[in-house]
Image (cartoon, rainbow, N blue to C red; front, side):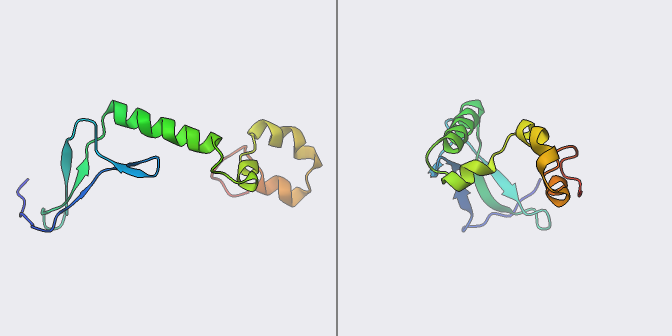
Length: 105
């Protein structure tokens, strides 16, 4: 792919655990504008260890104190919804349906 060099091409690292972090390999890859084929950015090339670090950071963030009690209550298990479905009003049952995720009630 032919590309036109630009002096103002920005570089982006991986965003993990609230910080910009370079890829462990130090490698970056170009991002092209498909209409001009020019390089518009360079992005950190995340490898397996980088992905694992990001996933672990995300898991800790969900478990950790960063969520308020109200936000933690948002993560209700589908099993709880299924066992209490009969006690909800009809409109609440439709909005809480987990039978067909992504499908409007």
